[in-house]
Length: 305
Image (cartoon, rainbow, N blue to C red; front, side):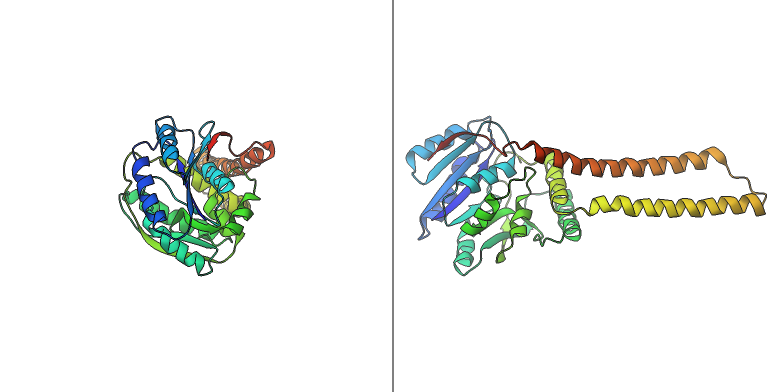
């Protein structure tokens, strides 16, 4: 059996179409399947619509959270509750086309444990988002030793053994595409054309994208912390050279050093670097604090099978 996990948050405008396309694709496959919608604390009619679908289709299941815990938590819950031999992660907005799933299943049956969707082209996105996304993935690749595929999202198929490995990880600030790469196994990409959102507004505004990006960097690299050491040595070297210049001017020339302007400029620059480093350290400390509290990643309000 193949499980399709669909995290949803305020998606009443797209649920019917998403269900229709997923059913058409999965119903055409020889394998049995389940559609597991994970309701991440929606405040519109999303939950009611899926409940009605559950009554008419035994393949559809609904897992509802007690509140909004975030997309990565919803994906985690879907993996925890999915029963299939393979699990497909896909968003409800239809930007990742369900028609790609049969290609993923084919590669899985050919022996691959993870088959991820690789965006060959992205429709309906601003130039700013495309450029920043491209730069981020390459920046992340330069920071970490984990081979996280470039230009990919959470859209992927995973074998049961990969899911079991992910279920053993209890970290709170989750970057799922990074975790899937970290566990290893045999992986392959399938290129596809990323479509425009079918309806409604994006549930990943700039603020959430920045948080996800920071989670990805801090979860898989400590190089930003090492930046503090490098900058410390650099500033110490610059300060020593500047001290030699001042001594030379004082002893061998009649040049007078303009006091306040240069002093204030140097102080502002060094203090800015100090605050930047404290901010980076604070990000890591905050994540340690989240981990040691030991709270659950999500809380289930209801599960309809």
